[in-house]
Amino acid sequence: MIYWLDIFGVAVFAVTGALAAGRKNLDLFGVVVLGLVTALGGGTVRDSILGATPVFWITDTAYIMVAALAALLTVAWARWGRLPQNLLPIADAVGLATFTVIGAQKALSLGVNAEIAVMMGVMTGVVGGMVRDVLCGEVPLVLRQEIYATASLFGAIIFVTLNHLFPAQAVATWIAIGAVLGLRLAAIRWNLSLPVFAHEDKR
Amino acid sequence: MIYWLDIFGVAVFAVTGALAAGRKNLDLFGVVVLGLVTALGGGTVRDSILGATPVFWITDTAYIMVAALAALLTVAWARWGRLPQNLLPIADAVGLATFTVIGAQKALSLGVNAEIAVMMGVMTGVVGGMVRDVLCGEVPLVLRQEIYATASLFGAIIFVTLNHLFPAQAVATWIAIGAVLGLRLAAIRWNLSLPVFAHEDKR
Amino acid sequence: MIYWLDIFGVAVFAVTGALAAGRKNLDLFGVVVLGLVTALGGGTVRDSILGATPVFWITDTAYIMVAALAALLTVAWARWGRLPQNLLPIADAVGLATFTVIGAQKALSLGVNAEIAVMMGVMTGVVGGMVRDVLCGEVPLVLRQEIYATASLFGAIIFVTLNHLFPAQAVATWIAIGAVLGLRLAAIRWNLSLPVFAHEDKR
Image 1 (cartoon, rainbow over the protein chains, first blue to last red):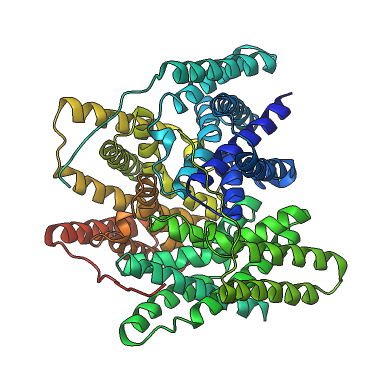
Image 2 (image 1 turned 30 degrees about the horizontal axis):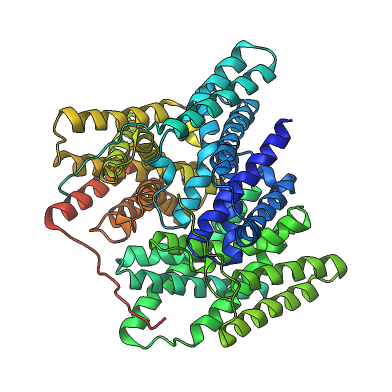
């Protein structure tokens, strides 16, 4: 079940990568690259930092296939259909929630402590989108947007705490996924955001 | 022979990095950094992802020396000579071809499967140029340009296929290098390119 | 003693990351991310390349705590106090000096040769700031600025040389830290810089 949510998250993140490529008029190769980077970037950086190499998509190539396919289908969909603009943020929230929990879980299974597991959860959730935006020549959305990374941070903390308290991992998993989803969807619905730090110096 | 082609590829890619630095008015340190990053970036990311650390240029420092020297010679050359504008794309194509084949070969020697070997070949060929462009504040050329990464992908597939079919690796190596070169030079000559995905949404 | 200098360097670099976030109007999460990336980026890339994973801040979480706290305190400080604009470059120079020496030392302790140790020292000192600038959508300052990376390079060479000549590591450490600091402060004081490579081609 978690595996299928993970695959679903990969597909959704690949779609956001492909759409970003479309806004920059990239060619088909660029579309696939942005799809792959957005979908697999977070987990790749997590695994490299933890030394869990070769990284996860080397041993299970389903991830690459799904991401590349999702990116290409986005192009076809944009050309011959109508992309459901309202569905995408919700699907993206599901991806964020799953990636966060899976990232924290993998870190814990490698024996790191609680703070690091939280950080790896957030990293798995947000780094892909950051690299996507940097490749598009933009300041990452996640650094300026409504509550996005904060929802991931909140969920990662809940997961690591509950995982410590309850023997059955399923409890922590589902409550944490629900927490990210709830906070993220509330942020979209009511336009919640963190305070901004605006500072001008004379350098 | 392959080793010398590899060194040649490193030198050529370092020259393209130095020229990009020149367009951005970077200082001499910036020139060397862009040269190193362009020449060694692809293989470094490949080795990190595969867990083949320390990465290749740690154990053979010839790579760093050649890249740094090539970057500095580019500055001297631009100041006192005339850079042969026509030769550069051809040399760059040779570098791309060699890096692709060497990347796929190294991945196979580490025991990954065919899809991953193809992906690692392309990554070795194009990631250095992508980091170069990002450091220059630009959307990577390879994501928008005429057939470049596609030539690398084509060559990597040919290499992995032939390598599977023939016992002698030399056959696969030379045919694949020829394939990348041929496709890339044809793309330059006739301005071939992949279709572009232009998509505007209301976000 | 070196450990505390290292922690001091982490705090100072996190402050420069937070200030960069303030110039781009990022939210509080963005401030913390830029603080962490600037403070820990160089060592993270160094450890990944050397295969010394999990990277240094996984096993000692004091680094993350100090960097995050320093980033958040910068926001409070900018709002309720006055940031001492003159102190910052000097503190930054201390961070650069310490990171350079610690990076080279760690590389040597992992058994690499002298050139690689020098390169890892410089990388530890400058990569964090480069990633910070790229995330802000700018060409890294260190590639265009007055003598900055060059001071790091100078100190790394001195450290590796002295470390080879003298049995007591403290000698090499303090002389090298002094060398980076001296050159960097001289560069700030008299506006020293490397020659710039300006090149226009017809591509």
